[in-house]
Image 1 (cartoon, one colour):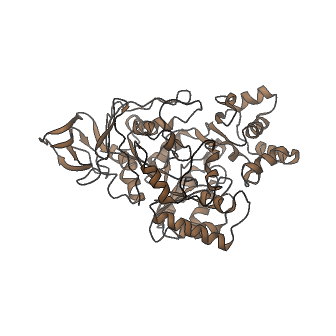
Image 2 (tube, one colour):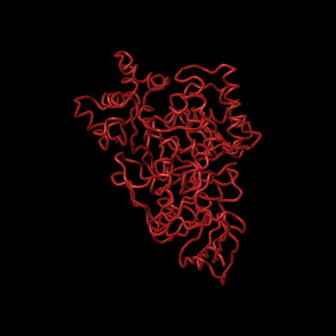
Image 3 (cartoon, rainbow, N blue to C red):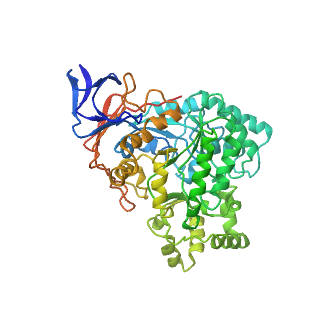
Length: 518
């Protein structure tokens, strides 16, 4: 007798091959039989008539670690309810291991307060062991973050690394990779990586070559200098022979949208020249950003201390204001989603806050950053809907949340992508016919699994791990929005994780996630 038998469904196996009618039998965490009209008995029979049966979705760009929700909400309900069965954390240069010194953990404070958190690990191996002790709703893996290594070595210092320091960083990265990390991430826009030299970046990227693990990069600019930022990545990593993934690719600001064709051409040329390059995208036109990244890089390159000193100095503050005005961006409608110690800012636009203070929008922005010790996250409707769709259809793209897993409600505003990214994409596929269903599912399953080097997930096949989603292609849709982001989506009917029914009827039924390593 099988543990689970999924009957009468339309199987889309993740490989991109045409859908077909097939039952799916699951036993002891594995897929053990496929085919029409399997007649054996099972402990649980799921009728998938008129539904799609697919591999569990892999969220390759996830921040449940940097938002700390992997500990606060280990069920990861908002992700399970989207059909996500595996997540990869440690993105954008910020991971929770390895921690070389107590300074290392400060890397996440731009997203989450460090107050009250408990750290009882140092190495990657120890961190993964701690994760293994949690009741996880989804499978969890991680990258190694560049900033966590760099900050662990030199703290808030603004300088290039010495050769000895670079050797320490190399060894720490190699050790973490050997202990199961899937690759290495960089967040070149952020304070503690913005001054990294090409020599440093090249040497670190080279550490991935022997294992073919991948490099995930948050570009140094996603606005007017995005082409130069992509060229930089291709320069230091393109010739190393490693897979490269650009994180949450987007072009911020209407005045920069004209760069889209050049950006896509640059990516496609690199790919056809033999660079193993890809990118992930979330299907929304509103970004969820750290507010200090709108400042000139010289104003934040030393971290929060440098930012606050800059804004407190009248001459430096004037230079920052001149820079902001020269950018020709509309700051007024940016919405504060989270503001450390200043909940009265949350949900208000910068224009509203500035008017209450009797100052300009640019001055209001600087006041908000100063009042929150530079710990403020914002929503900015600064992306092109057309570009988002085109990014989603590119053969080089994966679909990811770039969010975190939550359960329940929260005082801060979170981006609706944390609850709705995948169903929103599937709804786009249904309504706008931007892709065939088989192509869309591959972007969520076998595509990211191949980049990760996961050979037992991302596909429905005999003897593969039983991560399975049953969803209704006619009704799947997101409900979360910016005012009510905690709304589960419709149409995701059943989610199986490692052979157990983990989600059904909008409820988490089993915590069967595992820590995954490579």
